[in-house]
Image (cartoon, rainbow over all chains, first blue to last red; front, side, top):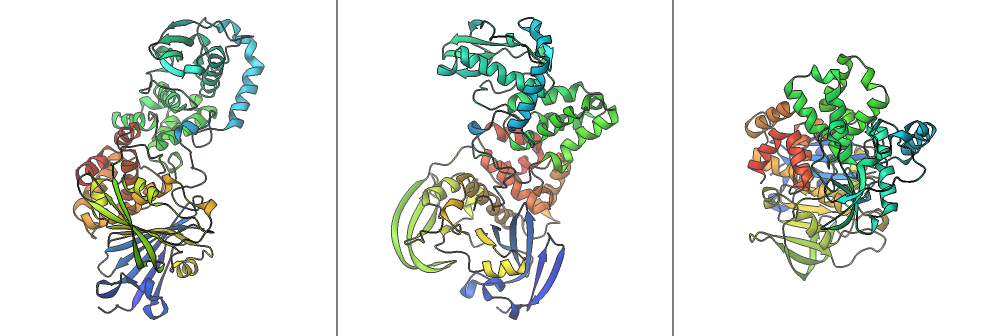
Length: 72
Length: 451
């Protein structure tokens, strides 16, 4: 499977959206999973909630792939 | 990283219910300074209330006496404030002061005669004869021991709302919503609304025009100031009894943080379903790691449908290798992942930057509920949020109007995840039914789909 080539990064806290070529993004960000089962990530959304950050990655069909929560 | 995580916002972090402080606070629970201010206030006017001892209530004032009035001893019954070794004259005095201070904050009449020593099947107790005629309907909970005061606040908040002119201008549906929100005796959302109501009283709520009162009361249902930022309930519901097998050693296990030797455990539910838990064989002593026991405790509270998509939990030996990118992309130099839940059925938990900042059990349990809630709703309801169950959920949001947290109001996905967390962490506890009264349409969906 090939990657569509661009990933859209949305920062809901700042109200910004940026498209980045997949070549500028680490492979671990651009793809979900490993091996033959890996899926291209095409959209990443981040939301701020009281100082913590929730980052959600989506595939080309709009399907949620994973959600990461972290802080600081 | 308990202070940094979404589920332990400092402003809302609360310990176990029994540890909650005596005095109220901004946001609903505990503020010693506020209680001290009240004590100072009533101390100045105490003389005027001496006659009230045993002679009926005085609104919002301290029923002063040089000593605690001779305790009335009688049968058990009423609402228990203390029992056992704490049920003596000193305990009586302490509890009279406790209720008196709080009643003053709520501008409620109080008489010392309502608190007494009693003897019953459970031994000596300090009990309160709830004065329904002046305080309104009594709490559901009969055990009011320790420092918990939310049951009192619930009833007093409802009483003040009902007594207001503004209340009478609301329609029955909104009145029922308000009763549900203000009347919760154990949940954080209600506690927050009660705090708002108490502050409004201090700001002269009772003297405001009916229209202004009605606006304030309506905002308690829909306004963000009357909600906690995030759902962070104490985990108080029923848990599954799991069996744990292992460990077995795995060489070069593929953690998200990189390959490392691991110990593999298997957790099995009574229905035979199981998941794997991988923990690093070797850990960095400077970092904070959750244990397999904490993971077991967390997954034991997952609703059935939620955990059926779960295959493994990994306690990673090192931080998320993607942190560097996330930190740069979102301008957070010290960003550190805590947990990732993915559609492949794996939950990754990362070590905290030191042992002191390791998240609490409540955080790991609540975070797992929330994040797997995202995965569950996506997997079960699909990606098109304009169709199917997403439409039902949106209709439920409009019907309920109440949201379980401010963050739930961000979008429909967060509303689902936050509500799933409230549902799962309280199931089997009184707070669960309190949430059901506040968000009945959503809980009906979760009853059917989440189980």
